[in-house]
Length: 435
Ligand SMILES: *[C@@H]1O[C@H](CO)[C@@H](O)[C@H](O)[C@H]1NC(C)=O
Ligand SMILES: *[C@@H]1O[C@H](CO)[C@@H](O)[C@H](O)[C@H]1NC(C)=O
Ligand SMILES: *[C@@H]1O[C@H](CO)[C@@H](O)[C@H](O)[C@H]1NC(C)=O
Ligand SMILES: *[C@@H]1O[C@H](CO)[C@@H](O)[C@H](O)[C@H]1NC(C)=O
Image (cartoon, rainbow, N blue to C red):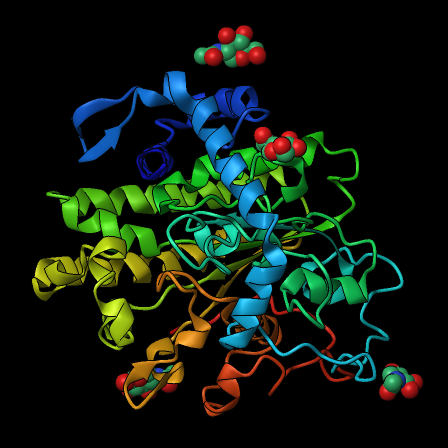
């Protein structure tokens, strides 16, 4: 079982498209089967230090079945998982029925769909989607041990989950739903991305930024094939959370860091260009990952029971005492901000908004120099449901105004310092954070 899981992980992390032209074809062909591309396995470094697997050819379906079976088995016990997580403080506090949502919902949707992106209100979003890695796949959110480590609680993910309601599961789609009950695209179950219930939350665990163009094509295909989507008329929101895997397990294996950064640059650029040119009426929320100093701080402040696991989930971190790796990691994040802010990604019906909601997270989520474990899943890698709920609030607030870092105490509470569209500002931000 463990071996199969490791193989699954291998197949997940080493599946990557090679070139732009091929992607379109392959994504179409593979879509019904999986969001991943098959590549032959050679147990030697592929030219840029990446391993691929031949297992993909013969065992893809088997691995998928194993993942799915694990998923189904674990989820059959979800009540006891929820109960246990509630007991140890990793779930948000449910909001009672006699409290109403903190924002006044009237005027939250335009009488007619606006034609300009700067006039977009939260209720104007008809389609919501999520790209990225395990955070949006919901990996590990309720997991308690090794057996359920890879289970995906996709319906809880802050940018692409939408099961239950904001009262028990605070996610961006669950908020948007209040403004537009016809909102569509969020995951309606805890399932794998291949499952139709994932809708347009196509995030996959262990995804690298380098995999993003492929994922964008998968999403575009799904949008086009779904009869519920009116490509021309509907306003769409895509929430993107990706990057930690590159810094934790990829960057430090590159001999040629300049080449790596060049590749990242072109891949980011390609992803945004493809989305802009194929998805009309689109607002992208791009979540900026913590800078390298903050990521190292976060690792430094891990609770004692997590320290031993650091080497598994971020084996690059000891390498960052070498300045060339450190500087490359700094540039990796800076470059993403710069590309997302390029003027060509601001148009009448398209915008990318950078969100610096994870800045200084190691300060805000720690007490006495130790990170509060209730924001983290048991595996010490992923966010807990409470962590996801707080990220939801941060991203929601950030859609209206840059994060106000004075509210440090409110930082860690899902419903404190909760911003709302109001008479002075009804519209979603279309220009992101610059820092
Ligand atoms: C691309 O798709 C077309 C039509 O679906 C097919 O005829 C062609 O063989 C495909 N090419 C590759 C490289 O898969
Ligand atoms: C919401 O705002 C509208 C005006 O914009 C007002 O008429 C209504 O009373 C408000 N509702 C609540 C519950 O405050
Ligand atoms: C996963 O398993 C369930 C239950 O056996 C099944 O209904 C579902 O279709 C499977 N999903 C995939 C993607 O194989
Ligand atoms: C983040 O932390 C650094 C040093 O720990 C501090 O200088 C900076 O002001 C903080 N930034 C925010 C936005 O709080």
